[in-house]
Length: 369
Image 1 (tube, rainbow, N blue to C red):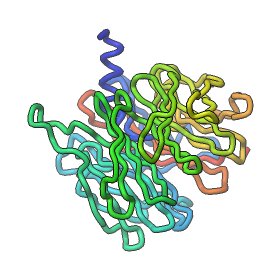
Image 2 (cartoon, rainbow, N blue to C red):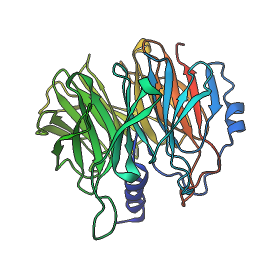
Image 3 (cartoon, rainbow, N blue to C red):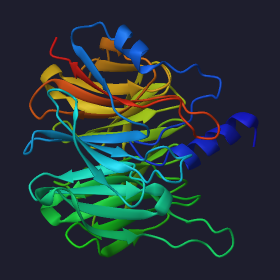
């Protein structure tokens, strides 16, 4: 394995942990941008930013509660910092409440109807369920795998969570040299099924509830199409060098993947599950990670993590609509339902020991024009 491949393997294995989430490490010599500098560069009136705390990863917006929720893994070099969930006012971007967690959450999934928030606790190999109707009370936590007797590590570490609310199912990608997908009952966290043989270090997940299809990306460069019922492989396509996260558009039956190393968004026609077809590659700046649909603009938003931007591309022709420079490392995306308003978690560059020089931020972007 050459030095580049070795470095990429470490990136997938260490900080491809979540989602939209945990991301490839910045180089240790990357100069951090202080929160004040981020505010200075965000002079565009469409951008609002607030500094939060260390270790902010995935964010979700609750239309029912008009609140943002952020998974906070905390300072991973501080053994006394166990992480938390932040409740954030989307209007002011101020922290409204902090929910203590026993382990460090990275990924999130929200059941807005039932008022439940699910976290993937990657370092602890567990999934937790919180009751938002009762101030974020922990309802249950389950560990998906136990530590190996040989090396003392968890063999499978959960990354992305996808909720099929209609069928009360959670689908969870689990990182391993040969990864797997866990299927849990979203009401009880009981394991209902395990899909093995899904390739090296599966990262991104997307679901098509209408056709009961599960899409995943893995470290082999593949996008796979699986049956949500039994995990049967329906089709697959090699889409690039390092596909991370996925977005499915049910209206057009197109799947979008961020190719982190290839610096592109890949569009795949999945009308035929058995023969996914590559349609186009949309060039991005360095380090594309998270994807989000912006239907009001016929667009896709992407975090260009290593370049420090959020970019908006037209899905009809692949053309760049707008690029917003945020500084540091834009990470996860969520949006206000029915409105062209994005929320972005923005991380500080990490050193080799995983320490961070300062707190991460939340940014709101008006992409209406």
